[in-house]
Amino acid sequence: MQRKLATILVADVVEYGRLMGEDEEATLHTLNALREVIDKLVAKHSGRVFAGLGDSVLAEFASPVEAVRCAVEAQQEMENRNVDVTEDRRMRFRIGVNLGDVMVEEGNLFGHGVNVAARLESLAQPGGICISRPVFDQVRNNLEFGYEYLGEQKVKNIAEPVQAYRVILEPQLAGQMLGVKAEPTAAWRRPLPVAFAALLVVAVGLVLWLKPWERSVQRQTAEPATFPELARPTRHFRVEQPAELSNADAITIYDRIRHAVVAAYAKSESPYAGVYHTWRRYNTAPYLSATHGRRYVNNYANTPAEAYGTAEKTGSLREGSVLAKDSFEVTARGDVVTGPLALMEKMQSGFNPESRDWRYTMIMPDGSLFGTTNGERSERVQFCVECHIAAGDKHDHLFFVPDEYQVQFLNPGPPAE
Ligand code: HEC
Image 1 (cartoon, rainbow, N blue to C red):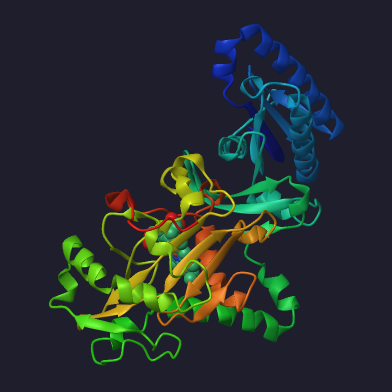
Image 2 (cartoon, rainbow, N blue to C red; image 1 turned 90 degrees about the vertical axis):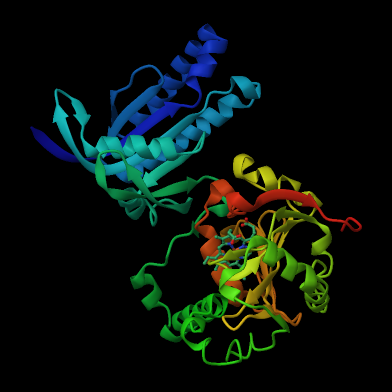
């Protein structure tokens, strides 16, 4: 069988079944019109439609750059045509583009190269475009769109995961690479000390946060940390058998220290540090968070962030939302010690595309500021951004409370706003 390298574009109508169910004639009419548009655009970019049944189109291109241009123009044209259509009748496509090896038989193409394109298509948002790493490598320097790394995705029947990227069409994000690690070559072209210093700062933040030294050191020393930044903790009291704390124990400890913990955070200039504890709390008991330094944590959200409880489904929170995560630590010796306060505040759009406009702030146990995004020592909280990016755009960089602790409490006290 003949094989070749080709760029494959797969487009598919979102909710085709629903549209057809509601109005078959109108749906077919719109689909035919849109297919004509796509056919023209494919030809314009020197491509060829090789398959497509009903609501899907498969096309091949010699050039990834042309294929992505075609995808972008197609999505823009659909958006234009949707302007005068009511939301429930809008027809949108998802598009996936892959560059890979395909098999050719009587003008038809199949094989991994096509399967991966179809998988990418399923990952795209309605009206969106999702591309694979080989395509990204070809277009990143040629096409001035934004790109967001979506991580490694599994594809049925293919052992190797596929690295997927979202093409960002918003003009204000042109040239942005979200979640994309700088290529080693690019980083080394910058003056070495700058690149190294930036790396070091992120590393220091992360190390302070995760406290890897504690695993070995903690058992012998009385002091919880030798790092000056964290060596100003408030030690509250000591508990027996710290390794076997139940949820009830954690609640009891928290009840006893909460007043002092909040009072210490409140010394900071953050307007939230002294009031967050009056907001809704989203966890039944303080729980151990490995990613937050093996501390016991709680999750609070203010009134604008009311959707936090359902954001896992709806996807994002609005401007003005503030999430607060206070923490305490129980050392191996049983000392109960205040941990840092982590804040995420949703700022106005454009504040920081990389953090999806979240301002991450870390306040130390004594109320001093460790760092805040786009503000004082912004680089120190970059590690928060880096890790939260992993949660992805779909979830607004949010991770959510572990299932077994989820609940919504309205805490007593005056509303914060
Ligand atoms: C190593 C990964 C990692 C780092 C670093 C990290 N976080 Fe998180 N964060 C998580 C995870 C996982 C959750 C959800 C689980 C939990 O509650 O522990 C979370 C939850 C949160 C939440 C609750 C809202 C949500 O996402 O559901 C806030 C607020 C938060 N983090 C702020 C911060 C701040 C501020 C920093 C930096 C000082 C930071 N995080 C650093 C992984 C991380």
